[in-house]
Length: 293
Image (cartoon, rainbow, N blue to C red; front, side):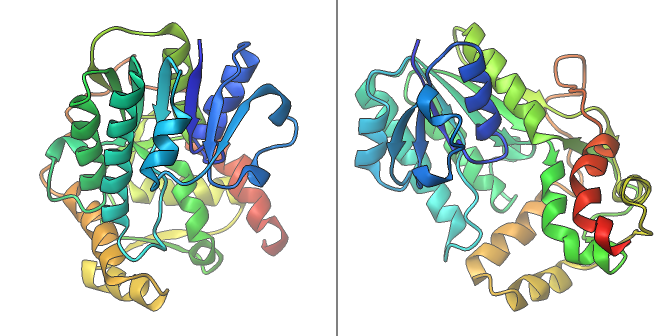
């Protein structure tokens, strides 16, 4: 079985690639910069170097594969990240049809079931439709909020706060991307027939207030969650140099699943994964902040 893996240096894709190798497979890794792949992994994989925005590259890279792991990479620095996501999804769909790929596992997000009105998540919703229309057996994993998003908030934590536009007591799914990678690798190795949607919701729903308390205990720092408005978030992102389109996508993403929204896939034994935020924060955030405590 030949499995192609996109984003093999990302938080999810890197875990998928390594687990496939450990299972005895030789995956084909679609990567923009092959130099970023771990040196110990390279002898055990095929490498296709190129850009997912290049239709010809994607089509050539998936020829002869039995299954494709597809994740649209984040491109917040792009002038129009949403347009990039849609274009990459279109390229994936063309490639799957041209190469006759039998199965596709796509990484999506909680909120994609809204189809419209959730900022950058709308791009994932569009990707879901693009891949569904190929005729392949498509398994979509709609994931909760990644723990790793907190890494981008280190400066805030150094200042003693975590800011959000959500109510501080509103709970939602938080998940370790490594756990997402493990679910994805297991499904790719087991195979499946037909198409469907599953969820990866992490161990427990958490509010931002609870997240701040957990991170405080794990890092030894006093960190308080505080709410800001959508307008304040927009101003912060623009001041950081993001484009108007990128800012609209990010603000819309948080606002679109904030009010009157319930995930289509409910939490149960199939959607719950083991890694806690406390253990992840102790292992990942604490070392980043340890020299400043």
